[in-house]
Length: 387
Image (cartoon, rainbow, N blue to C red; front, side):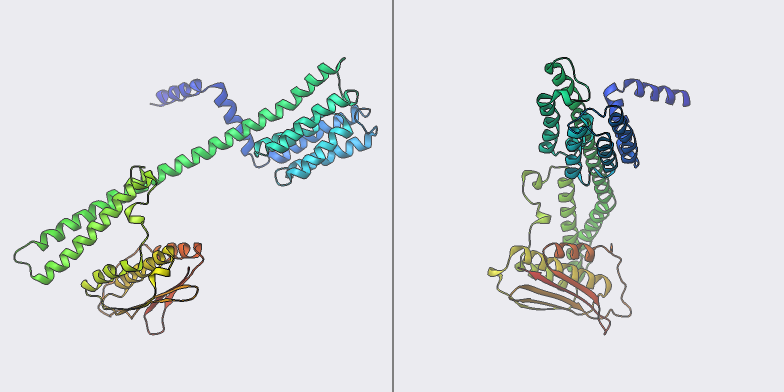
């Protein structure tokens, strides 16, 4: 078994192309946390060495000036990604002062890798223009200007190609992370489908079977029919989630799936009616003009009421619930208040994420959500929604 595994690994290694090997090596080097310091040290030694050995090159005939600008470029290399524009200016000054084109290689590479193509173009053209205008000031120049320009072009092209290679690797890593996230989402949806969908389907079948039994009383049949209807809605919503995940649902064609369509205040009537049919005491006091309300605010109001009713039934079954919806000059004020739970009531478990997700959605729309227990033992859920 171990031999077969080693042979398999060798086969994969031999099958890897040289380009993939270079990309993996380059990616590992780029991911190193000390890459900037290492690059600054190596780059500084190279720049300072050139400035010391060729003090006559450049437009400034001063060895100290060449060494000073080389040190500044090397030190600034550590923070080049954060301060790319000042770093590029210093690097360009290094070309003019020292006369060697390596001063802009790291800046040009970084600009390409970050997608700053205008800056990268300027950094690439500056050495070429310098080689055309003052070839005698270069650290090393050929016998005629054409060869000098060719050598300079080679020095400029190398960092551009390395920058493109780094940007390609970054994009590939982002695509791989996105693919992994999609696979994880599909796995979670499968788990929900297998664990929840099947149980809800079984619940619907059992409730429907009881609802049609001739020996069942009418109240029992009505309750079972409510359970069956709620279960069918849950299965339908779950089916839409699965379809959206696999790209086969209505959202794939640019439309919202039915489970995600915006609700209006008119949709609250059947929602409240369903809970009342289940035995919950609910009072509603609404003062609104739906025609002048933003659809997004109405949808959030529906979600607040739905979450408040769900929590009330789960944590305080048979306790009275008071729903108030008031239209203000700035938006909507929605509150769901339930009384204290009965002593003999059984509380149902929840996921614990409903209020958190609802608060995030309301805050994203500029609203405020308040939730907490009341002195009498009840619970208040109140939202201020902007128009």
